[in-house]
Image 1 (cartoon, rainbow, N blue to C red):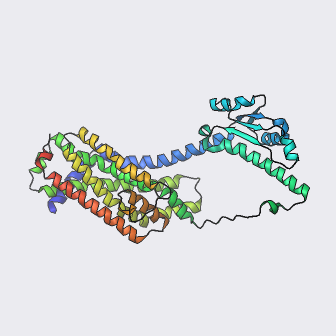
Image 2: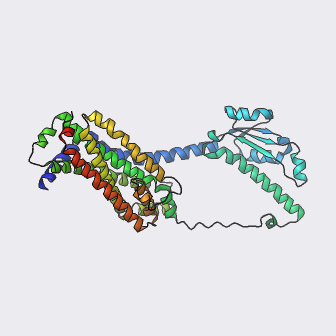
Image 3: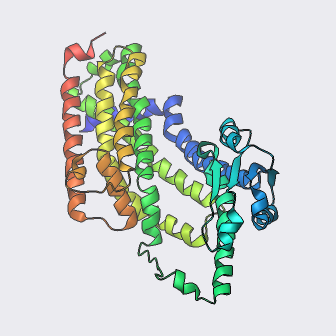
Length: 398
């Protein structure tokens, strides 16, 4: 054990001298996570505001039938009316982007409405070009407001009760707490983020302690030391795992900083987020991340030892990102829940378990199954790494 610790200290010191390792482990998560969150939020808010304030060019066909509707749109502002556009050209012009939208009012609209019948207003827009659905809302909401005015006039003229046309009063009661809603939204994304950074933090030291040492010719030196193969591989493995877990912890801290820097978050929501990312919750989530870090570290070290060079190791290890993206993406799917089957699927089980932990509704039996499956996976990967390191044809493959 003493020799393993000695090798661990030696390899850790060498890794901390490597700028790439320090960048991936410390600098990248500290900059990237707050940067991504703040940038995405600012861009979305700016785009939504820009879309709301943009002057839209809309073709109005049959506007003479509904002067009140034209007046309502005019009062909204930021709308340029195109009144002389042929009806059959509106769709083509909207597709080309020469018009933002079109409102077509059928002939005889006034007569139909006056006879307490239903008139038709056709709204034409291009959904793919409608950022955040703002154009659709601006057109539809005004027409619905005009529709309500007509209904109110009919009710008043006929002396009817408004509730006659609304026999069912639907009262929506959402029993989900704010914490549960936030957990549902962020619960799938957060573990993906932490797992990804754990992998990234472990990757560079893992590549350097295997393939890197082969290139530098220092592998033979450490093999000639009094330490056994098991002690050597455990020392190297410990450094890689330390880097991965440290990166995950730094990503947690960076996320906390990013949330605190976001001024638009209400104080009550901020308090809930802070409690969700508190020390106790971080420690609980970390117990799920550690077995994944063991798996990543053992897998990366095994492949790094197998590779002839650092470049080859990179080309082999990099595609492992797919093993993270696919199950993590499945965890973001609505309706996907932690059960007896999903609790056995690596990474997916971490994503789903984290979501339930954040919401405070974790099933401890299923969580135990998650831990068991992760421990088995971590143990198998470490066993394979030790066995792989004991093969001469693997170490001296170059």
